Amino acid sequence: LGPDSIHLTTGWNLVSAPLQPTEVPADVVFSTPFGVFRYLTETGAYELAGIVRKGEGYWVYSNPDTSYLIAGGHFTGYRREIFRGWQIIGALSDPLPVGSIELTPAGGIIPPIFGWNGSGFYSADTLYPGQGYWLLSNNDGVLHAPSTYRARPAVQPQPTWEADLAISHSGGATMLSIGYAPTAGIGLSAGDIPLPPVSPNSEPRKAVLNAEGFELSRDLSPRGEWELLLREQSTIEFDIPEGVELKLGNIPIAENLVLELPSGLYRISFEPSMPSEFELLGCIPNPFNARTNILVNLPSKSTVGTEIFDISGRQVCEIVGEYNSGVARIKWDGKATDGRELPSGLYLVRVSIGDRSLTSRAMLIK
Picture 1 (cartoon, rainbow, N blue to C red):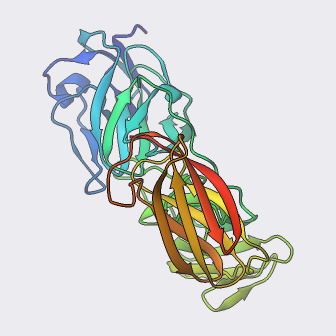
Picture 2 (tube, rainbow, N blue to C red):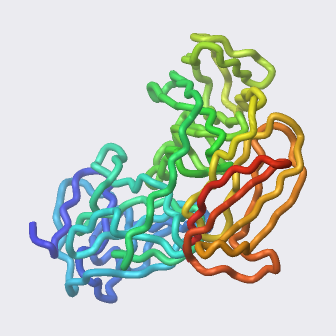
Picture 3 (cartoon, helix red, strand yellow):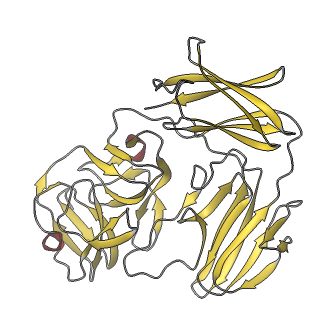
């Protein structure tokens, strides 16, 4: 098939316009009695698409296999508004590596970007003409495809431990993973593995992890708290590292414990041990746009002084506060002490307790 054609297999297909589309109704382009569906990020729901737009992806149901010719002109890029949450994005007239797209403000894309192979989602490394892809953003912004710059990848938190949950239900089996990572972000963040919304009129997933309303198959938590959503009665087997003590509600979870649970939302918790020494863990996220958290291990309640320096060595911000023992999260909004906006660039972060100081770096991108 040429670049002006889209091939659909029997069932649901995730598609986009391989050429600059003309002002033709979507149901005329695809001639399907089942409808052409777009996803509304703001409401988390599907609606019938009016016209096919450049940069937007769609669900189309086909029965049987078929192909469509798409009218329009060759295009090599687009910009589109993005909202926090899931959206279906389109490809270009030529293949485009996923590393060549970026969001401004930078750092909002939570990988991976998902394609659809007719029976399941896969992690995409290239956007191919005529295909649609799920993208999850952690903030509002503008998507550039391609981008004029290559953003630094977000620092991936390293979990102290991970545990697996093997869940059996009427739909088969689901494998989920939880992990404790002091440097992970709170809620949805780098290191998590999100799950895209299912196709229109499809059954919801039977078992998922939940973070801020987003479904996950892997959730790294800096607080030792996770939410498990079961949509029907299920059997769960826990595979927990030796020495890790978890609770499901108030129930202690032992290694290789098997539980049968009714549908519902369950809280899994872990009580982290207190740090043994003063340690600067770094900044999360980094690079950052609007704000970052400076993570510090504190063996006891302490007054912590935080200083931010630009590359010339000039102090631009100072934060002083008292923090409880554990992992302190010192928030910096990327501004000077007097509230002035600071330019993009590399900044030195110094945290101090008494006469002890530790340093790290933070990259501000606007």
